[in-house]
Length: 544
Image (spheres, one colour):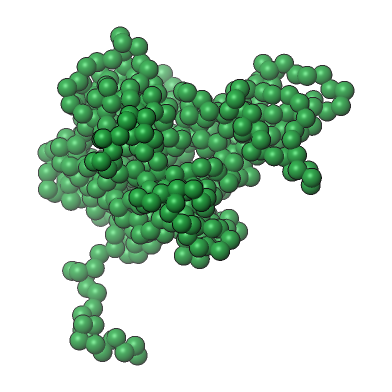
């Protein structure tokens, strides 16, 4: 017996159903519906749902899925825009103890098919907008799954499956006693992210991690009962950085948005007094450079969180002038989205604009609910000095770090090392505690918030009959943050291909956002051992 078991502070002071409840974000919705059931929870076009109605829809969906034999740890995939059904899935599926797999709507059919197969999807919920893409993907899938159709607003798209979403809810039991979970470490979500090899990796989240991630985001972002959150960040990205749960925890209102269009965003901000939104730097660029006739004036300040490649100072300046307060975040799918935040320091107000914006573009300090962030030598695991010059790797330790990669022990072991989750991102640590990324050890390109594996693109380019070697690096882009730039060494005697031909060649084999935007031809710089010197190419791409 452990000596502590007989200590007065431990003896007969045991866990009890009254004092120990497994953490799950589902509880945010049951609390909200009980506390303020009549409060407006979701606005989706003409549709309006109160918290009582949202809980009813989620309960009915859980009941309907149970009737389709969805059980604990079964996978329910969904491919949809930022619509109410995506929010509902984030509560209904975990009600059953099943695993939600939001799919990236920007991927090609082959990657969708891979995700469905690798994740062992039993059910697939399909927004009609993506029915043609899913139809192609299902032709590549050799497992049986139930397909549930979310109809298009005009009903013009033929259904893929045998079940209609609203009919499933109508037949669901509003008093369904959903099982929930008994272990907060149980898997909740499966999100796919690109690895350095180009093979998608399935990141697994737990109920505990999602609960704490939602609270950390809500606390850091200043969500309250009066918050109105506009969905410009795709919900398939890290489960929308946990905001489907965070806004409900605060009792705020979520506004759905199918397509990110500046005119629509400005209109919704003014019409609904939007207080918060998140998005990749591309969203900020779109708003900052929107034509005057697309802008609708508003009198309040909108709080914006952005992640990915830091926006240039011109975007910060333009967004501030328009009434937006921007905070830069840093994280990864492996950390449920944001792990650090560039917390604004009051003394920065006295700095010249360019210096102030440079501070605001740093990756910042550890997020609420994140136990620790360090910048360390990946060989020794010793933290680098906080001198703003010594480069190390960003590492995170937190309850909001993934459980691991599904069916990929080797990749998990390379990422969860010792006490830390290794990011693969190289940074310096400033004296004030803020981290600042300097390079990426994994050569991942972040374009418009999407991760692109350079090796995946290189593999496709080298399949072209004229290409001998290919190296793809990030090229700075004022709109997308970064875009792929391809350096090509041709086979002896090969005729230089036309750029349009290469673009078409890539588009037939890659998702469109992964296709290089620029091509450069000539011998590739190499080390004495034949390794391509990508740092040289990055400099060249930046000068193009």
